[in-house]
Image: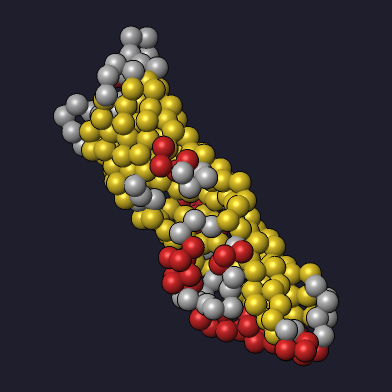
Length: 253
């Protein structure tokens, strides 16, 4: 999926929200509290700060936008990630990652009560900027095992749909459960390891990067290069994920 596809997706999404906003005259902005600000509670335990703002547009529909920030730090669930990556030459224990993301969505509430209560389906688009330090083993001179740290960032653009449910706890507070939100798109990024490499070290680093590239599914490493001054690789390929199990506490105003 190319960036042009996402330009069309974003354009269509904006048209959908804009047309709905023009038809939102049924919402009484004077006598009704049409805004909710929320925080994702479980995300805090994973070092993520995640907020969402939702605004009611009509009796059945609303618009929401989420912001997420995670400072660069060690990975949670390292043993699980090691099994997923399945690359013994990648030092998951030393892996560090941080990110910033923006996710706008348009919600269709399905129940009789209407927005912002009940089950909903929400098409969304998402932009995420990831920063990472990726440590990789390679054989150094004199049979030493060395670690090269590849520093860089990746940008991803995805689109998908969210299934969720929101309940009114009292006049001011709401509970919003993100049940599942599959999404798919594209990514692009660069990572560089700056360190002097001998001829033998260059050969082994090349071999390690080749193994990682061939072992990935999907193959998101587009190319890599090794020189006497270090190594680098480029990320350019499909990107997917699941937005799920978010438990948000919201304040309506």
